[in-house]
Image 1 (cartoon, rainbow, N blue to C red):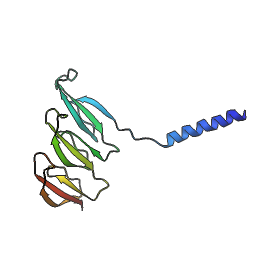
Image 2: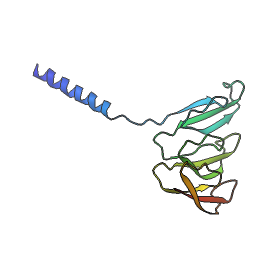
Image 3: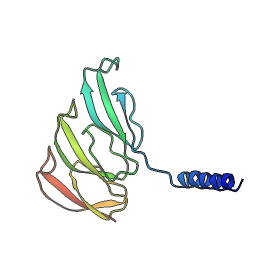
Image 4: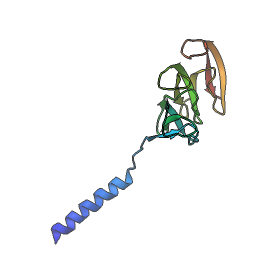
Length: 147
């Protein structure tokens, strides 16, 4: 009887501990290009010639950015709120544009260097600019900071 109660206590404690520490799961999945990309997700790859996407012919691999600080979306992907484009380059991963961005979550930052075409989060201001080859399609980067 004592052993059974001890074993039950150990199992109950292990279950409670597992429930008390949820783990962040970074999910990705495939959708058709004519489907909406959920808020907070990015298009991380696209493929032409889809046989499953009637009307679009293009598959998107989308990825949830929750818990990430850096991500690599295609240039046509929505950029999540609080994220900025820090570089861009040619890529075969993104059929249709051939351009992939590096984006960073600046929620916990006070300054950043961004491509001139990057969205600027609310409350951030441009404090300077310079020439750079980091951003495909432009030679201009902005220095931004929280105001």
